[in-house]
Amino acid sequence: MRLTLTTWNINSVRLRIELVADFLQSVQPDVLCLQETKCPDDAFPLKRLKQLGYEHVALNGQKGYHGVAIVSKLPFDATDIRVFCDKLDSRHISVAFGAKAGLAAPLIVHDFYVPAGGDIPDPEANPKFAHKLSFLDEMKSCEPLHPRGDARHILVGDLNVAPHENDVWSHKQMLKIVSHTPIECEKLLAVQSEGNWIDVARERIPLSEKIYTWWSYRAADWAASNRGRRLDHIWVSSALKDAVSDYQVLRDARGWERPSDHVPVTVVLDV
Image (tube, rainbow, N blue to C red; front, side, top):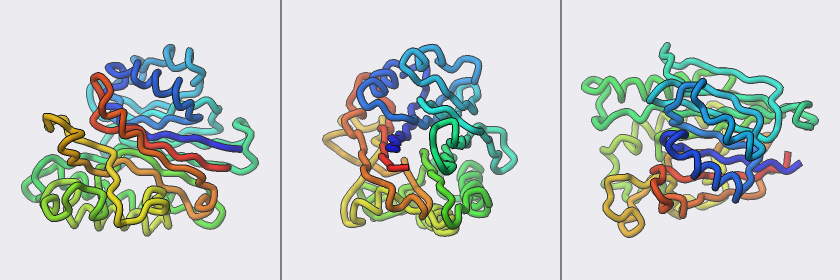
């Protein structure tokens, strides 16, 4: 069975529901993982998505901030929400696909929105940055994020860290900028290592090549300046390493009308 999965920080799902609809009609992923939905569960645009064939939705939202959702053509066998740093701030949801979706073996999808961390890369001076570092530490120690053996897991989302030199437009100029500071990169890579995760982008695209998934709203011309960062990630457990057949970043989405500052990132797997 071929599974197409997209992750996208939509930066308000209600504001951009027609962009979501256009994307779903064009790309037709089986599963769409959204972050920063900024929407309480009872106001999520379910009707519009169901009209498009996405009848299965797992929600963890809140009014005005954060929020994650998994939208699917395939039914879930189970859903789960984990709390990190003792904060009820809607940053994780996971679903299990199995017999109901026609799979012979379970497949778990985790959708994350890691804290951005504010502007000052000092945990003593900036509680938001301290929260981000603690969140990454808890991800590292979270046992359900340690798939072993033949466990088939996918972890996606806006992880708000660009961990490698060519995940940012200028490694040297970004070293003291939140999202690419050495401590953040070290902690995110420790999450990856502890869970034995495979970073699909860097498995398929050499570390020597630039990859971006986010461009700031502050740039007068985002395409001309091209000061991007790779904040949006797709990781797979070792059991799925050979299942990946394609990986795409839809850069053009950053130029759509009233876009998110993040673009959709899509993986295709044979599951």
